[in-house]
Amino acid sequence: MTGTAKKWISWLVKAIVLILAFVFIYRRLNHNNELKHFQELITQVNRAKAIIIVSLVVLLMLVNWLLEAMKWRYLTAKWSPITLWQSIESVFCGLTWAIFTPNRLGEYGGRVMFLPPRRRLHGVFAMAVGSFGQNVVTSVMGASSLLWFVYYFLNVNKWLFVGLLSTGIGYMLMMLIFYFNVRWLVFLLNSVPFLKKYHRFFDVMKRYHFAELFRIMGYCVARFAVFSLQYYLIIHLLLPEIPMVKMMLLVFVFFFIQSALPTIDVVDIGIRSATADKLFEYVTHQHIVVIAAVALIWFTNLIVPAILGSVFVLKVKFFDNNI
Image (cartoon, rainbow, N blue to C red; front, side, top):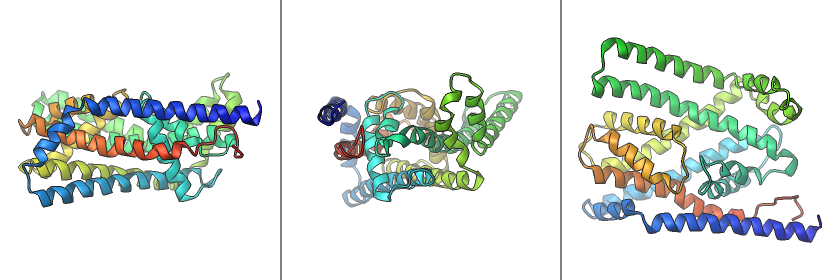
């Protein structure tokens, strides 16, 4: 393939990605009653306080994705070092790709395109390690909070709860053990005959030892704390009567359930809203307020970064570093 043909294909793919992203975003925002509810509700609270809280939520969004960029840079440091700015570009580019793909799969493609062509498949497996770490944090915090939820609100049989407690603890331990022994997955993949020839790609996961996995987990915990704080700030602004501990434990359960549901970023606001509404009905009857709060976080954490990331889509080099 000639250099000119590669350039045309590269620009065509970029155009398709941007068109799809903006069409999906426009259609979702154009029919978003949840955000309209938030606009109405925000007028009912102190204006200065509302501006400060919303500004903090936006600032925390930037902190959240900066932490993810730092984690991504650390993940690639051993085999394809990149600068922090390159990492930021790739993270935001991935968010644009993720907006219209199931389960955010496009995020992998968008992010690794900033790596040299020979390192992109390595990047997919390195990113999987980081994503798994984030899922472990969400699962441990979410499962423990879910056990509290069952005990506190559902009034189940004592022996049933003991069984759920044992299962929950076993699940959390299994997630932690498997994460800190991620090389087991490499051995599993190597045992599959038709995958064995690709071992040079997924062997990258064996390069992360306990100390490195612990540091990656640190980034994951920091991110979890950041977007938990976002939810606390907005919900407390609109529903200050909900006790902080109950609120945060319900938020952790919400994260846990949300992480298990297959969806697409631009349409999952409906699923997010329904999930949060069902959980928070145990502590409040202000359904519209809960849905509006979730909508604002969805818009801030996913839609705004996807729009910002569209700038970096134009910098992607699909074929080689000379295009």
